[in-house]
Image (cartoon, rainbow, N blue to C red; front, top):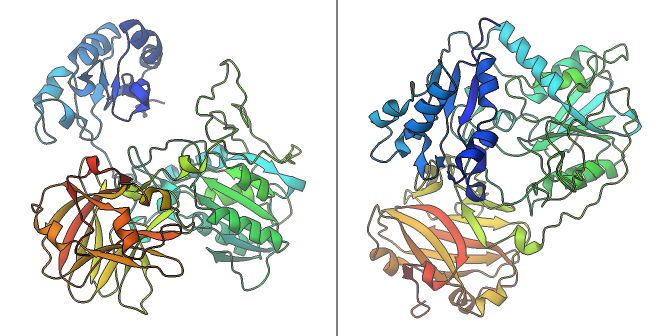
Length: 559
C-alpha cells in the first residue's frame, strides 16, 4: 500500500460533454459540476490519492488544462488536494495561446507535470504475475452450454479468429502509440498472446493445439476457441454512433457458425473495451467469454478456459460485469437503478463453473436499420467505415494488400500508405505512388452498395484531401462492381488547380460515374484512385454529399 500512488481522472466533467463529444464542452451549473461530476474526488483524495489528471474537455467554454478556478481554487484549495496534477497527452496544447511545446498558462492554472514515466521495472516477474492474475479474475462468463468449459487440455483444440495471436487487438489503444495500431510482434518483447498461453498449456498436458485464423484445420478438433473482437482504438477514432459490433462485417459470426455446422463445439472469446451488441455471436457459440483487453498477459485466459491434466478446474471464473450489457444496439442509456432498466445482462452478472450455464436464445434484432449501418461515410477519422476496407493494388496478377494497420505498402514499394494528421492525430492516410508501376488505392465492401437513387440526383462522392506531390501523368478516380463494371474519370485538371499542402474538398458527381459505365446498383468499390505517375495525396474523409460540401467539383464533360 505504501508503494502505490493512485491517479484519479479526468478532472473535471469529462463524461458530461454536450452530445457526448470527446474533448467537448461540459455546459452545466456549478451545482451539477460539484454534486455529480465532482462527487468522486473528495472521497478519493481522502483515501490517499496523490495524483489527479486534468481532462481534455472544457467546462462552460474554458479548457480544463487552463482552468485555474477548478484546478487550483477548487481541487487544491476547497478539496485540499496536496498531490500532483498531471496533464493529459498534449492537452495543454489546446489552451488558447498555447502549443504542445509551450504552455505556461497550464502551469499557472495548476497543472504540475506533463506526463512522465519510470520504466526500469517493466516486465519484472512479480509485476507480470499480478497482471496475469488480473486477466484471470476479470474474465466474465456469459454462457456455458452443457458445461463445455473448462476444456480438457489433453484433447485436440483449434484456436481461431484474428484476435488469437494479435497483441495489438489484445492490448488496445494507448499501447506504444495513440491508437495502439501499426505495431508488430517484435514491439511486445515480454508479452504473451492468447494463443501463446493456450499452446503452452495444451502441449504441456499432452494435447494438441492448432492455430488457424480462418478456422481451416488439418485434422478435425475436439473443440475450437474463437478469439475475436474490436481492433485497437482510442478516443476519436474509436467513437461509435451505436453499440453494433462491426456492422456490415459478419466474418466472426460466419466463422463460429461454420465450425458449429461441422460439429465442433465452439468457445467464443470476445475482446472489447466496452459493452457491444453481440447477441448473434452469443447464440452461435456454445460458450461465450467477455475477455475485455487482457493486455500483455494473454496466458491468463488459458489459465481459466483450460482445466488441469487431471480433469479438475484450474481457476474458476471470478469476473462480474462492471456495467450493464445491452439488449439491443441502441440501448446506450442502460444504467442500474434508472426507470425502465432492462439490460441483456445486469450489472454484476457473471457465471462460475458451479452455475448451470445454458442460455435461452437471445433476440437477434439489433434495432438498427440498414441506413444507420451504412450512412454514406466510407472513410473518416483515419479508418474505413465498418464493413469497408482499404486496399492497395498493383499490376494485374498481383494480389491486393488489405490495409489493416498503417504503414502499409505493396511489395515493390510502388504504393505506400501512412498515417498523417489533419484535425486530429492520425485521422488521415497519405497515399504515395512511386511511379515505378501502375498502382491503385481502393475501398471495397463485401456487401455491394446500391447508390442508384443517389446517382439520379446531384449526390457526389466527396473527398477531403490534400495534394502533397503533384502528378506528372494521368490520375483517375473511379468505381467498380464485383462482376466488373469499371468506370474511370480523369481528375488531372482539378488537381492542377489545387494548392500543394492545403486541405480542400473535391466532389465527383455520381451521375458522371454512372454515365461512364458504372452499375450504381451493385458497387463493391465505391472509390478507386489510380495512376502510374509519382503522386502523393492525403485523404481525411470519403463520403457521399452534396455540391455545397465540395470546394471543387469534377464535371462530366470531357470524361
